[in-house]
Image (cartoon, rainbow, N blue to C red; front, side, top):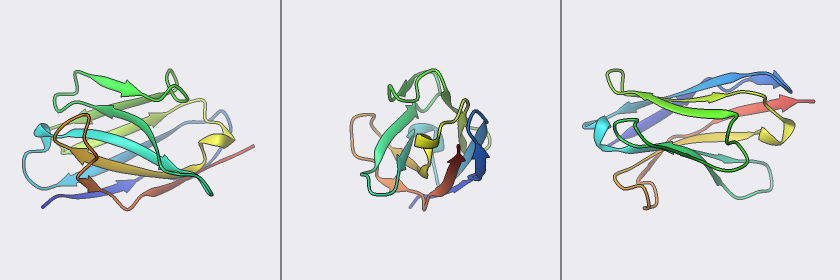
Length: 119
C-alpha cells in the first residue's frame, strides 16, 4: 500500500511563486512515475506534469510549460512542484499521484492541497 500527502499550498499574489511537496509512504518510491494534477472549481481534474522514477524525464501540460517544474528526491521519498509566474487561473486543488507506467491511470492519489492565486 502507498500513501501520498501533499503540502505547501497557500494564498499567493499573481506573479509569485510556490513550491509544493508530496511525501510518499511505502516501498520502492523510485519505481514510480510521479505526477501532479489540479482541479479548479467547476472543472474536471487535469494533468499538470510528471517525472519518471529516476527523475531523468519530465512532461508538462502546455498551460504550465516554462513556468512549473517537477522534480524528485528519491533519498527523501519526495516529489516537488515548483510554480513560478503564477496566474489567477492556476487557482486549484493540486494533487500528487503515483503510477508504475507513464500512460496508465495513477494508482495512488493524495488528498490535495489548495493553491489560491489572487489578482
